[in-house]
Amino acid sequence: MGLGVRWTLHGDGRTPAPGAVVRPDERLSWPRTAGLGAQHVVAMFGASFVAPVLMGLDPNLAIMMSGVATMIFLLATRGRVPSYLGCSLSFVGVAAVIRAQGGTSATVTGAVLVVGAVLFAIGLAVQRFGARIIHAAMPPVVTGAVVMLIGFNLAPVTASTYFPQDQWVALLTMLFTGLAVVCLRGFWSRIAIFLGLVFGYLVSWLFDLVFGMIHSQNGAGKVTDHWRLDFSAVAKADWVGLPSFHGPSFQWSAVLVALPVVIALVAENAGHVKAVGEMTGDPLDDKLGTAISADGAASVLSTALGGPPNTTYSENIGVMAATRVYSTAAYWAAACFALLFGLCPKFGAVVAAVPGGVLGGITVILYGMIGLLGAQIWVHNKVDLRNPLNLVPVAAGVIIGVGGVSLKISDNFELGGIALGTIVVLSGYHVLRALAPAHLKTQQPLLDEGTSAYDEESAESAESAESAGSAGSAEK
Image (tube, rainbow, N blue to C red):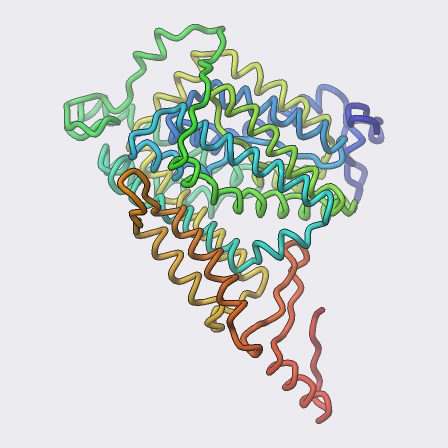
């Protein structure tokens, strides 16, 4: 398939044959492919636009670089891994912490650029040594804990920054978004965040008409009388133009805050490659390292220009599952649409005008979902939290990360929150494992395979049951 930019026509080019799927190296007719590309853009729209707004970055540049990142990813994987790369929500908490410490947008993108470079290096290592090195350094108990503290660390941002701007709009938006996620079906449930944004916009506009200005804190944290929905910047924005570029700035304190997110990105990429491989029937384990390094390279390029980092999007996996179309041609179309959106400043201004109350309602659900993905990793990999070897480092790290505990190293250097919590989980697990007695050391499942194993005591119990004639089985 070369570089993955050549496709054979699937059937009549209209719809997949009964029971068949459109494989990555196939395509439907070009009009249908373009339509599917537009659908992928809508699917990633909510999260990919909310993330840069929450990080304080240019949404136009974010959407443009998501298109470029997707192209890089498709070329690197030679068209075997259909995926859309959008702005990663895992970095929202990092940006909030860096800005709270006085950092600028350049400081944020500089810190994240280093994370992208580390992710690229991890991808190269996986290509060379295989996925087992991921398991050795970051077993599921560690990965789940870090993802959890990244999500829950964001709770104060919602509580103190967004929700107070308009509590009633926030509450209504939260309720609507929750209903959309749970009650809608198929494609509509996958764009629930986007629908929540639209609903919040409409409610804010209606409240402005009915109740007039609101007396509350604005985006800068000052209590004033202001309109909930302010389109003044939209009116001034041009229809066509380049987004705002800026270079990165590097500070060690900011880099240390951002580095733990690399664990979440590795987990996201591994899960994405595994899921796509299962859906297409094409084992993609040999592409895991390439996918990780491509994501890292794309993030480095985006942040070098002032944009946000990128990651694979699960929303687009849902679109593929619903349509049975895994053609990378559709993702090329989506990437082209993203580039066009990025060249429309007026479009970005509309996104940037999202009222704070709307963001409050959405982030209540969104941040919680990010945190609970960590618990999902534990459940999927059958992590036993009854084992103190797992429980102790996780308990300490999560409380440190969520509670904002800090450790002052010197007058100019302090560790806290996400960074300190991750260090405690990662180092604590490996140190305790090295010192723990043999009966606490259970065999951990591989990150991709989710295999389960048993410690010495349960193995002896299983042997006893088997010898007694009891029926039993164990997955290996």
